[in-house]
Image: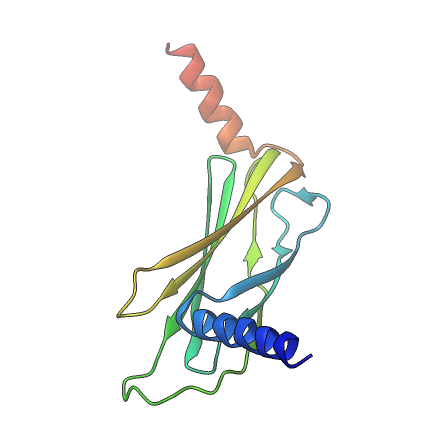
Length: 150
């Protein structure tokens, strides 16, 4: 019985040590089943930071060419080198996307973890999201004119 407890303790300790030096953990993403052009869509993202020395530094979004990208930047902030308690810290963010054309959009979520003394780490999740709606008049006119001049 002591051997079992020792093994579990060693595995848990190893996991915590590795987690303290690694990226955050992107846990869950909420996307609606579909979206409409021009209508803001809120994306729910939940995850865990390996310890309190990691901070959610920022969230950026970009859309274009039927790809929407959400980048979450996690930064290790411990300038004094003090020991960080091995406690996971939950995080959540709710970025908004607006789609400018209908179609099957790839929603790419990138969690980038930056620690000065380790290589950057990325976790990527991708989802397909059908977007319905009208093509804007300006875009349709531009496309028609472009076709006429070919």
